[in-house]
Length: 373
Ligand code: NPQ
Ligand code: MG
Image (cartoon, rainbow, N blue to C red; front, side, top):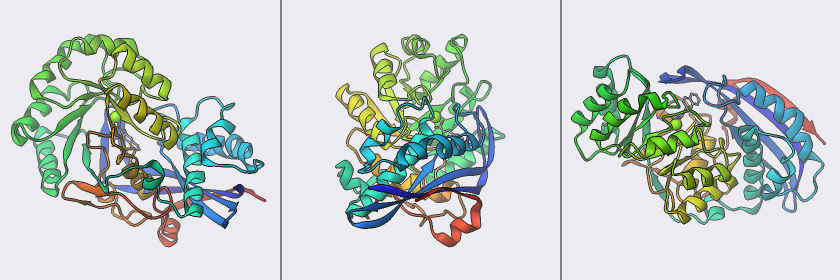
């Protein structure tokens, strides 16, 4: 294919309820969508990508305005002249730009969507994924009280979610986790996510979580603390899962070799795209390391693509792939639904769903034409 037009759509989507993690409270999801139009052997086709960066650089170094700039100024210009562009060569054409994995992932996703739509192929079939639905976990933000936490968790279990993840932070860890485990009993899959809020000084506190039979503790220490995570792992019974630290297949290999990660959270945006995500899946599977698909409060675009990714056989733990309704009153695509603890994998052509024009227009705060041939 050859790219003929690229448009960026900035959308502002109110969350159903504020979402608090160890790094802050979010009220609105500021999302960035990439619309790529290309000429292919089968005619003109449009593909959509979603950039998962947050509005502020709190989860990782990237943020929406920065991604907009790097996509507009550096990434798109590196692709527009390329004849015979395929999704599998996007990362190669962008390799001279250091960093910016979420921006690169969004562009690659749009090209892959266009490519699959032109070929009439679903993402599931492209990946060779066989399951038609995937288990759906839910991420529970830090609440104002333990009572409120129990109320929220009970609601999600009533809805049928297959796994609960509690956000933790120093001062909000042992007691809320104890209360939730006591309420839900031994059989509910329960895990925690610290979003890098602790240091090795907190080892004794983190050890106290061992008694609650958690599936894993996600990213207790800072992004660059691979060695410290390995040290912590040797002192905890609870398996350590890395999120922020896993930025590429290389870092995944390092984490596995060092003993820093017994489990890996794969987020396509964080690692530079769905194709790198598949490489990490393959690597982890070859090493017997369990993976699951993380979430970044995606719109239906990224959410449906994540469900297809999570249908690969190495995704042996439920992902943070909840229903659209977990976060949004109204999604910009057909909503992703959860039934009986599972989310269905789309079998229609493309990497995910496409925005519904009227809803996109309603939430859009800016539209930038990056290029037109
Ligand atoms: C995580 N997500 O696993 C993240 C982090 C996160 C579902 O727990 C706006 C946009 C707010 C993206 C808050 C979940 C966010 C965000 C947290 C991502 O660490
Ligand atoms: Mg996380």
